Amino acid sequence: MTVKTASSSNSKKRRTYEQELIDKARNTQEAPDFEISSLQNILNDALSQDAYLDWDSMERSPLDIPFKNEPKLKDYVPETPGDLDNMPHIRKMYFEEQYDHGESRYLADKADYDTRVNTCREKVNRRNRKNERLKQSFHNGQPRAIKSFFNKVLHASEYPLVISEKV
Image 1 (cartoon, rainbow, N blue to C red):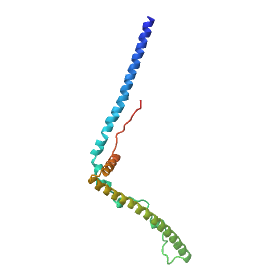
Image 2: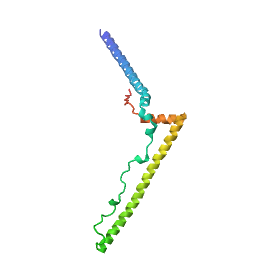
Image 3: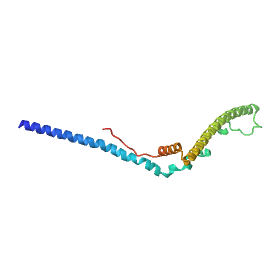
Image 4: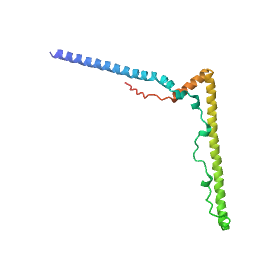
């Protein structure tokens, strides 16, 4: 009887082990199936979003760019203390010196600011010209332009969160 029990026990262990392998194989197959079905819809979803296929939305106006911290002269120079003509000469000279120094700093900072603004606007203009060339090439059916445009579409698209567990 002991032999039968041991054999029965081994048989149960083997069936449990086989069932575990079957379950593991199912789980291993279900994860990729779920991932594949999620990924199959990505391109269709991206292409169904009309906003990303609008050429005009890719263009920016250089005047629409928000620029912060534009230097203002009033932040650099001292406030005028009343009537300059009736001010003592030494105080008037000190005020004029402070004013000239502040104005010089303002002009330097303003020139730097203007350079940054112009550089940024030129980048926007270059990008707009590049997009215009892409649009023309796309409409002419050039494969490189078509690929580039749809890469932009896919890059701008939202994708579902896919969690893959390695088994």
